[in-house]
Length: 174
Ligand SMILES: [Zn+2]
Image 1 (cartoon, rainbow, N blue to C red):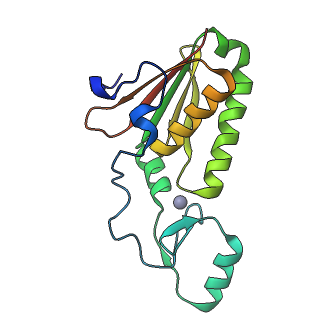
Image 2: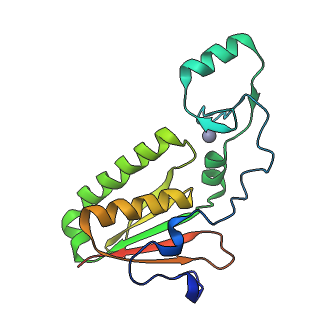
């Protein structure tokens, strides 16, 4: 377990201080990227200061002008194995509702990715009878925690890792 600072832990299961994005993302350069840029791995397009999935627009742009190529932050984090959010799901409830939980988390990722292609699940696996999820963004971790709470209540605990590199969310229901 990463060491969370006492002030960052919210044992009441509320989001509290974690409502806002607070981790610095070392994969996002201050000046952004040249435009337009496409990611050679996932084909996300960087235009007007944001990444998006838009095949039609990408096709049109390719006809008209030079497109730069640069791996997007999500693909680089996956390559480097650099998650910014970890969710550990445990408790008796999990063994009885595993598929349901996995589907809910996957569908939440789909919704998140539509808006922001940088929000992705890097890993989801069975661990100690529970589910261990690693995601590319703090915001997606919070989003998944929110949907779990809305759907199944349960108990949450949040902490930031040493050095504030990633957020850890522990969700439990017996
Ligand atoms: Zn990419």
